[in-house]
Length: 498
Image (cartoon, rainbow, N blue to C red):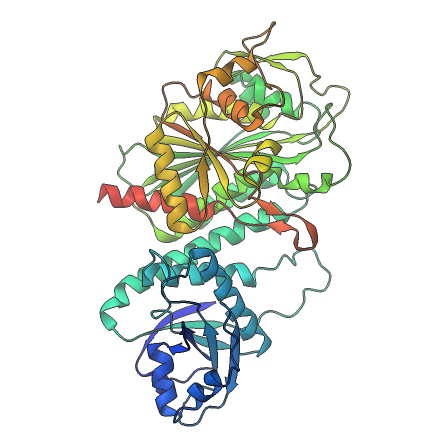
């Protein structure tokens, strides 16, 4: 998709379709008013007649307006003035895109400046528009014998009355494209089946990063190296699988040599049967999505590299497959982690924290400014927050607030849950330093408490994305979250530095 800025009077623009808005009591936006004057009030007549339903996101396609150069005009109702939330804005954009696809236009010119969205400026509206477009155009067709026809829509332009905003909008376009590209990679990795997207496949994708971007170097730790280091916890997960585990390190160097890096640690369980603690068969196919934390690290680093951000970022992927066989880890087994702490594995289906804890310990060697791990960790998180909001846990409240703020800015919502000392009691073991589960109560909290035992002395946060990383049902597929949140978090850190 090509994105550009266009200035000048709307009626004089050559385009397959102009997108303009109407709000409140049939109030035409500035661009719609200019078109209305050019076509001698025809738009006003249609609106007054009730041809455009007064429901936010409803559209009306008008072909061939008199004295208007564009082939079509798409009117969209933007609701009451100053009542548009980010969620409603996204719905409005999706409605417009649906109409544009139906009319088979190859290009469209959006006039977004007059759509008032709460606490959002034009740059945000442009960036979010691009992210929504890229989301809407995504299709997973890699493994279909018939690929289907590609979308005809190939160019989007943004109309500007004031050229002084051009530089800001150009930046928004670049960010929107980078985040959109990062989300598409994350979705593709998530949607790939477990027989293709293995730990080895993820390692190969990381090595490809280093070939594609000069700012990135990649290193892969094999099982023998992990064993020598003492990563008994991570290796306990892959023990029952023919697929070897990998610890993947992707190092993006965009900042100064001595700048402490931001470290993103992703859970990369490429398929999770539950191991000996076998999951129910229904819906088990969705356990290919148990590597979406890792996929989001890939997507975020891609966005960062595309934007050439002046910051150092390290992505660590703990990749393994959790399978049952004769040498698989058993409930009651005790393993020794890289930190030296011993873990009693009471449930082999609580495997995400077992791969993450060794990765978190390994992350300390980079002397990070902060460590954020991202994981589809607990079903309890889905019960707590549903499928709209990711959970945040942290040993530093300031870091948690930075993540939540980034979620608000990027419309990729996150919410902080508690992690008090009283919850740590649930992880006691009679036979080891710590148990890997704390029982049913507060399951997502005790999982975070487990991880916190391996981040003492570090500025650390944990994102549980079990409810937001993919959707089920007829529209089953990865969402690409939380790439927008993580990218915005890093953009915010760059802004602080400058």
